[in-house]
Length: 197
Image 1: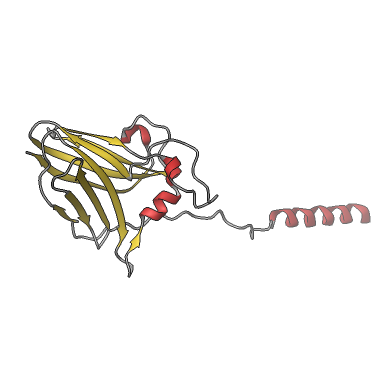
Image 2: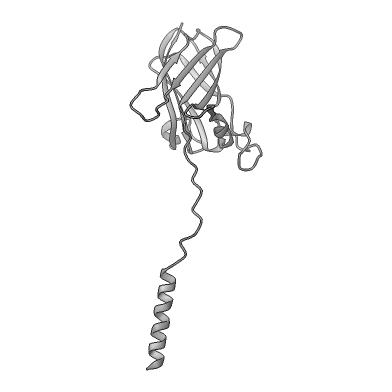
């Protein structure tokens, strides 16, 4: 009888010890989304001409105020523009350059450029992951998946329409160049109304 009580007590002790497992395991590090208040897209015409700047500034983030949008001028017909995107977090002083984080995590980011509404223009990537240094390894990425911090925009005939610029976090790579195929989370998106003259 003593043996049965002893074995029962031992079994109960084992049950309590296993059910009270150690919950002090270190949690997985959380890679927080970037805070982006301002997107500036600069379009510099190859061979000279007027640079066009597209700016979206939303200092209250998800607040009630819509972003302030500014387009500095019109695009020229039959022109190739060298494009570049700069992202800032202007809630900090001085403003944080978010491009540094996007570049350091180039394998987890991709810009998408969607032309619509009758705008006679096409966009193409001019950079890929191998152009950037990984913040984890300190070495250049080896993949050639596109990133889109640098791109070209080629116009043809006079027209007007839209250029939507979207940054996705953790999209599927490689993808077919569409937002639908890429998936991921949208870090920032803005549609600019443009005219080609």
